[in-house]
Length: 61
Image (cartoon, rainbow, N blue to C red):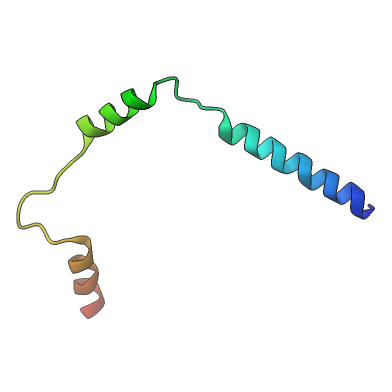
């Protein structure tokens, strides 16, 4: 395989990957997606330790 063939092969692989990544599988609009995120957001109860606090507790064990 020549260097030019390798470059072409890499370019084709990158193009295929980008095309697949850019194709949206979700037909909803960005506004609909954001609204869904807002509706499904979960807030922990008051007094729940933060992620940082839990990591520090685990580290100190």
